[in-house]
Image (cartoon, rainbow, N blue to C red; front, side, top):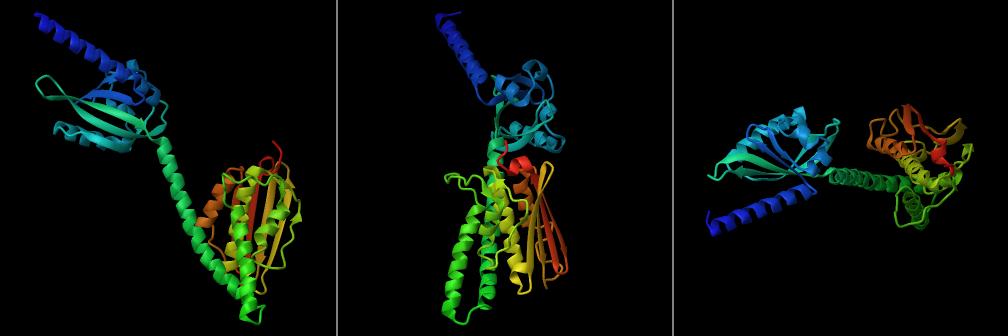
Length: 334
């Protein structure tokens, strides 16, 4: 071998070692497979991401990490690779060794031999689980925002009708509505988490109920039963639930009726805390969204963090909502 040939060989060897080190040290899972789908290489990040060691994975079919409902993707990928395509940022799902599914973004490139023939595929996989979780949270927040905006217009309309019954002039109506809307804004803010604002620690449930109800009627409902100081973690979820019950009551139930009545009771039952909201009046059989409504689902979601449940029963002229939470989560107890 000539000196030039030896030098080229050494350079190629150094480059191979350099590329191998990059693959070994990459934070992304890098997997090589042949066109029959057999795994040829499996770097340490692939071990961490998917749970299989290189010894377990190499020589096995790539389908061992592909869920059954995604198997058709593999055939399509092979077809595109054999045409020389590079597949970038392909979002999919793969299965870990323990059976858990993980969201991935894949970049797949054809691997060619010295003659230029495509003989394998190189896959770079990046875990996008956190990204997907954030996207889902954003979707939920946007849905809640739409729900709240729609509620706000309906509530404003209901408050105008409610206030108009007790005034004689437009000036009186304007003043009453202004006070109600300011109170409504204050009550609504209790049901929205502001990460920059200090939490109100140890707020009694009765005080929270008064704050939430203030915009809706002057003769505020008095809590009957056990009053407890609410923990920081319980304040926002319970404010949300009570506010949701108020807004639906103004639109469909007792708080929007001249003859409507509302009773709120609470009790400690062992390790659980129960709040019961009872409405009666001249409304129909569906004075609220019902169990399948968005508001009910959001109440269930909010209370889940407190080990709680939400249940609503509706009948002509009657609506009862029951909230159950873990007492330790609702109070200042650790």
